[in-house]
Each structure stands twice: as C-alpha cells, then as structure tokens.
Length: 349
Image (cartoon, rainbow, N blue to C red; front, side, top):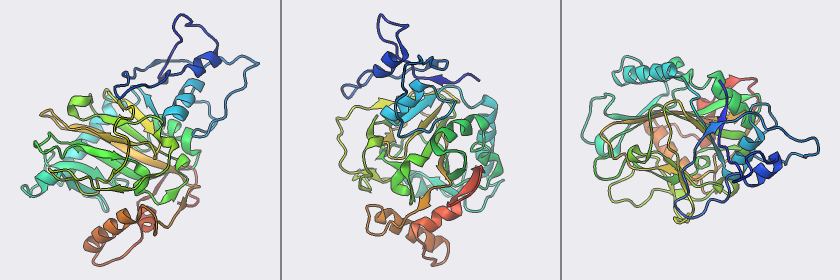
C-alpha cells in the first residue's frame, strides 16, 4: 500500500527543489479557522546531493516516512495517513465490540464505560449503551489492531523497534443527549501516563467510519506538542463530564485549530503532548474509532507525586480500591499491568 501524506506545493513552482518545499510546508496556520487538511499520495522526496537534511527531534531516522511527512510531524505533532486499515479489519473490530456488549466475550482487565447521562438510567449493556471499551490488550481479536504491520511500521518511526502497547480504546461516541456530554475536553494524553520520555510515545487513532464535525471528529492544536504538560482537571460543564475526562484549564481558546475529517480506515498518529479533544456528536449514529498508545520499551516509569498528575493518580487509586477491594497502587503500577509487548524486546516498561 502506497503511503499517503500531506503534501504542499509552492504556488507557481510545482517542481521546486525539495528544500524549498520543506520550508513552505503547510505555510503558516493562521486564525482560528485554519484551512482543512487534505491528503494525497506522495513518493519519497528526491534530495539533491548538496542538500543536508534537517535535524529531527520527534521522529527517528527511517525509510517509511518521507522528508515531507517527518517535517510535518515535527512542526505540527500529528500525521494523517489515509486508508491505512482495511474494511475487513474494521468489520472484525465492530463485530467483536458487539459481542462484548452482548456479554458473549469477557476479558480480564477490560473496562466497559457508559456516558454520564446514560449510566444512571440504563442497567443492561448493548452497543447503544457502551460508549468506550478501554484496556482491551488481552482480547486477542481487538489487540490484533495494535499489531497490524501497516500500523506498526509507522509506530516504529517514533518509538524505535521495541514497541509496547500501553493504552487501548475502542470509542463509541453516542448521539448527544442535549447536555453536550459526548464531547471530550481539550487535553494532553501525557497527563494520564507515568512513563517518559514523551517523544518515544505515539498514539495511532483509526476512524471506523466517516468522521467529521457533525459526529464529533478530533480537533487538534497544531504545534502544541512542543510545549510542556499543563495542569488538567474536570471542566466546569453544566451537563456533567464523563469519568476521567480531564481537560486543560488555561489553554488559549483562540489558538489555531484543525478539525480532522477522516474516512473509514484513515489513521492519525500524534504526540502525547499535542493538545486535542473532540466535539459533540450531533447525529443519530454512534461514531466509532479504535486507538492504541504505543511507547518504546526503553521508556521508564516515573513517580507523579508532587506533580500536576497527582490528581489523576488519586482518582485512579480510588477506582482501583473499589474494584480490587482496597488495594492501593501508584499510577505507574497501573501501567505496568496494562503494558503488553507488540514488537521487539521488553526492556523497562
């Protein structure tokens, strides 16, 4: 399958040198309503012998990403690859999701979640009640997503050859009840992770159907991966907030943003410090996506006590005590249990 990437050509100079194209890559994102991103097939960039490639901080040397793709991720913190996962694989994951909802399949450690407006009124499970399945790493059917070679070949460009699956999700964003609880506040995924360094962590997020602003697509703030981890907490929303949906309290709401319109099988890879969220599902359908956060097994665990992440650790500790009869554990203990080797050697994680 040919790799697809975001491609920008200088007006009037479609055949300009590679270094010129790199300098004008994406231009400048200006204003809150940045132009929609489009993706088109590209081949490897032809580099003149006198050209010295730039130094990259967020990607590793590889023969998968073009220079254009690497520079785009360096600048923006995400990369959208079109048509990466097949319809057949996506149907497998849909089928398994439905079996789990019907309780035909059970898996230890898997968390089945409902929307805050549904949880209080519905007791039985079905695919119209479950809004998210987390930690499916020991369900072999769903975990096969994490090991797809067309996914891991890109993941390796960020993590290196020793790859761990750390956090897995199948998201079934429900039609909004009118209280806007289907949205996800703007956040950084690193807030939830007690392993570092962030540049060795990447998320693969695949659309399981057409996704746009009507059904609550991802929205990203390009370039925010270059910043630091910000304090998170529950937003003060009138309609309520789903459990563990922490958000950044002080980001600039006028910062340029991009809504990622995606087709079934499209996959976006993004950095754990990238500020992102998702909007309200204003349709009658359920918006599905599947994702995995990967990390290099060379990463190391950290103690979050005394940091901005202490609040998420305390909340998870309370959940763990109720689920495991009073057991008190640290955030890093949770990730040690969830981590599963995908490729290469398990070293630290």
